[in-house]
Length: 143
Picture: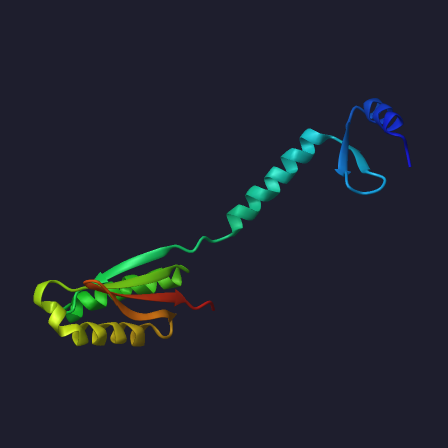
C-alpha cells in the first residue's frame, strides 16, 4: 500500500498518469498508466464490438387478397432474401373496398405464405386483422 502522494510522484517520474480503478474498494485501487492510450484502446474495442453485431431490422412486404401467382412468387423471393439476411419480415395484406367481405381469401393467402416460409423462418405473430389490413410477423431461423 502506497500513499496517494508517493503514487503521484512515481507516476510523474514515469511520465504517466495515476488512474483510480475502483474508488469504492478499501483501500482505493489506483494504477499508473498512460490514460490517453487507455481511453483510445477502450474506444477501439467498443467500435470493434459494434461492427460485429447485427441489428435486426423489420422489413415489410405488402400483399393484396387477389395477388396473382407470379407477383406472389416475386414477393416471396424478397421475403426469403430478407429472412436469409437475418431480418424480421412483416407481411401486410391490405383490403380495399368490397374486399373486406372476403377476409377468408386474405387469411388463405397468409396461411400460404406461412407454409412457404417454414424452412426459412418461423411465424412469430399469427395473422390478425387491424382495421383494413391483416398483419403477420415472421422471424428468421438461425442455421
